[in-house]
Length: 365
Image 1: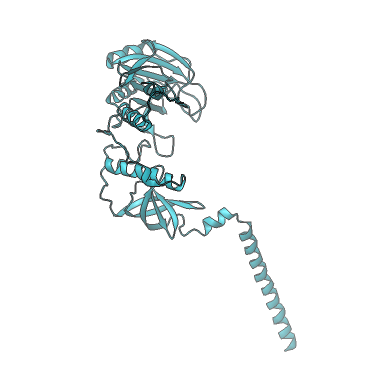
Image 2: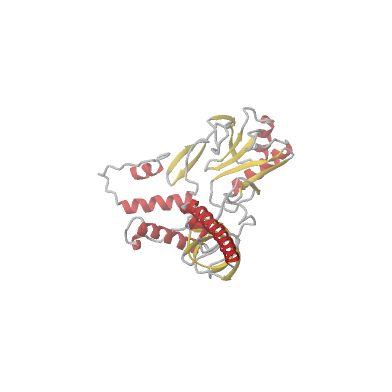
């Protein structure tokens, strides 16, 4: 008996040692996790979870913001006041993101987006809410910043001033070109990527820019122009830019190569199909960069400039000129700034980072 008992004790002792080793290994693994990894491990949501989230705010990119067990969850296309079912597709240390699966309780200001590409194209984030709702959300965002960061009374913030018509306002269009030779694509980047969503009719663009985009896309296909490939750095046509001015329209063709194939034919066809065009410019950008325009411009038609105005002030714009993209709202903004400044004429005013000096010239009045 004593021998048997001794053997059992030895076996038990070995088993205990094995368990102890396992426990020590587990503690070792746990101890090697960073605080960030431990926070993700302890988060109340996991990758792939389907959860209900009540949206209480809006994020900096227009996404809905809610909480699960006091843990922040961002949900694109969800609105404040909504309860939504989401699939968690990313978990970080202090927040998670979720893909909208179902709207359980719908906000009263939710509407159907006007654009067919909405949700695929990354250009707009709030077409699923009324414009009055957008203004309200933007006003609240500023109030939140003033209170949280500025430590000021949020009621100091006045309501956002919107235009009479919030569509077809942009006087400048920049469309990337991609795809392959024989299958060229032109449009805007998809959300969170540089994949091009094909489309040359954008409802927030001035209709003139849509005309320019459609004409350039068709001509590029007719000439079988090789599109630029940002992964390899090879190809020709990178971007098509349209600018709508008071005097006429500007078209800028950006290539990665010094030579624009069928250069004379481009001018012939564009002036024929887009009679409002005042100037056509070939810009060269041979660098592997996300910057759109390169330093070199060659004027193919006209003098390389157009003119535009803000009230009684006229501006000459070149391809590299910065100018406000919403002329109507620019006037609203400047008038309001001048009213608040209440200048008497004897002040010294510094207009820092003034671009083309549009505010300075208004102040000079």
